[in-house]
Length: 334
Length: 287
Image (cartoon, rainbow over all chains, first blue to last red; front, side):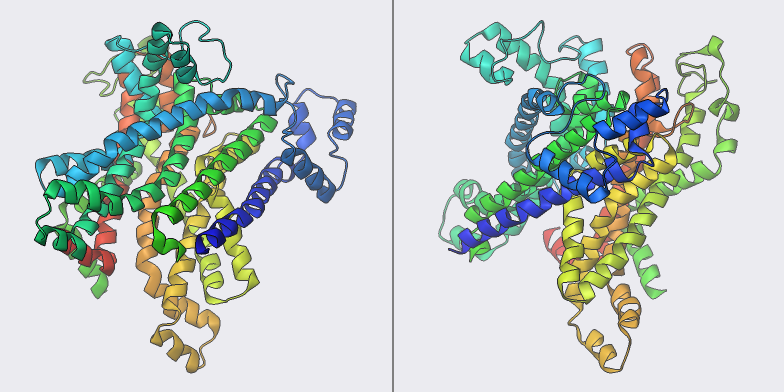
């Protein structure tokens, strides 16, 4: 029952939060620029062209009416057209979303699968050489600029050693794009050659993105295990003669992971933010790459669309994490 | 004063945090004495096309860039940009966020809830995404990067100060000063603020590292200071078309960013251990 209240409460706040986000992007795009129309039209537009464009974009209306129209349009998934290609931005974003999702999901999985065991070992062997090495790695992971790390990886693994492709998502056109998820598609087609090609293109971007995420996961798992291992139930289990292996990997880990799971929302934020620059370096055709192209073309409609979509993804992920947390940790819903 | 010397003593004992403090000190000295320390101070603005893309040597410690300018000297001058952006942006975030958090934490009611909801909305978007949107609208310049960062980072302080204010609000010393007739402003500034100062200092130190990373990313994306500014992120982005031959060109500025951010993170972690008694206790238990 309490869990239901928690879920309903979180869902209730979803609407004002997303509305607030839309108001922020409206303010950035319509209120901050001295004259948004001249801004859109560019430097070479004549006065008549600007007036015509102002009417066409509805920017001759009072601000509150503009805001209302903007909200109605965005809620219906209409982000306007790209000022550069004149294509609907929603279509552009939808087409690129799978590439970013595939990259971020694989990165979360990789960082969790490697990070959780490392965090546990680091806690069990604390103050050992391994623990110190891992601490250096985790501290560095949060201090490295991801675009720089991406370039270093390219320099070493793609240019110098030639082990991986330099950039892109697949050689040639890739599998017939039905879902946009190349890993799944190539696996379903049972096409080993395409699958390995897709995987090899993913290695460097995933390594770059997973590094800071890994650092966070190792840190929180270590702290969680240390806290759990000193609690009374572990002492009881030790007294009962349970093998250490069972205590650690079954009972301690379960409690320690609560903190780690909560961090996944934060990690997803790091990844979406990191994706902007990492996709730019690796020419990964996702949302981040699109955002960077839009920056270069001063396509402010497209950037606002990107801001809203990545904000909504982030909000929904955090909402899900809260709910999952409620399920894992019964104290939360009591 | 006593607290200061306590913090200083603890800092010297904690070798890792001390390394962080030394790195930050070096950064500040570098920024101040850039004209003296650099080997080619004129290269920030001057080009020598005949010497472009030379490898590291005794003449050019970190080689030369696409314009033939000395990378080492440009990085030293870049430290000034990094410090300016980080200090002003974080300073502004603190000045906006702390009063909001104090007031919203002290008074209870719909206005407090509304303030915190607004900061939650800002926190609901990845900081760099919002900063990109703002910086793009305003146009590429250092001032606009600072503005974009301040506008996106203040909620961290508002949230923190709000929570801390709520937690010390019911302490006896706060009740006592209210009973003695102190005005709300006096209670907030003279009684609550000093008690939550250590959390603010820790958050600010760690926040510097994050802000420098975001600022560098904005520079890398072309949203920072326009060329020929020796901004570190921009230097890395310029170097890309000359890879893998001119490896020094990309490596050196990134190393500078890494060291500086590392310095702030290490010092922040150390300060947290020293200033936060709750964590200090658990830390002793853990080691």
